Amino acid sequence: MADLIERLRLLKAAGGLKADSKFSNILFPPLSTNEILAAEEALGFQLTPVLRRIYTETANGGFGPSYGLLGVCGGMLNEDGNDATRQYTQYRELDPNDAHWFWPEGVLPLGHLGCAMYLCVDCSRQDGPVIWFEPNAHLDGETWKTSFVPFAHSTEEWLAAWLDGNDIFDAKAEGLLSKHLSSFDCAGGQH
Image 1 (cartoon, rainbow, N blue to C red):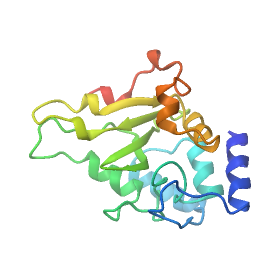
Image 2 (image 1 turned 45 degrees about the vertical axis):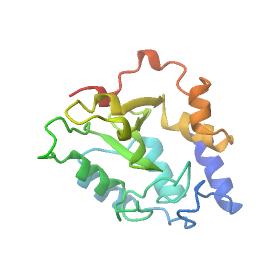
Image 3 (image 1 turned 90 degrees about the vertical axis):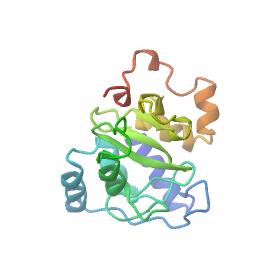
Image 4 (image 1 turned 180 degrees about the vertical axis):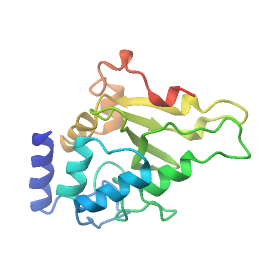
């Protein structure tokens, strides 16, 4: 974890820590411990250790793959004006028009990909496995289970691949990410 945080710190100091897309060109200030605690209280769970360090030592979103990481307490917002905490709480609500809708507890939508897709961190595990939420192929009347796709074994693996300059979807396709996901139990697959 220290290596990832140091790489982010150095990139930030050099002015190069940005989102891939020009959706946001703002790097949001890091959060205080009290702000992290407030976000965790609103979420109902703790962030993983690496996320706590990223958000308190690096930035409150605005950098990373695609449109970048959402903030957890303000900071980078999606096109609907939501930070990750608000997006998560909205996703956890039942949908009266879709009896099959569910959002797994502790799966935080962080990496904003556009088109309603997110790379999410499973905060129920310390290593923070990354799950790709891809709702666009969902068919009405069916479970949402297949919309949650294991993506990277850990948050560190995901962000390190991005820092290395790898297209994260090419890296996934080429097996550079999640070499051991065959034994990974995606939280999104449980109802």
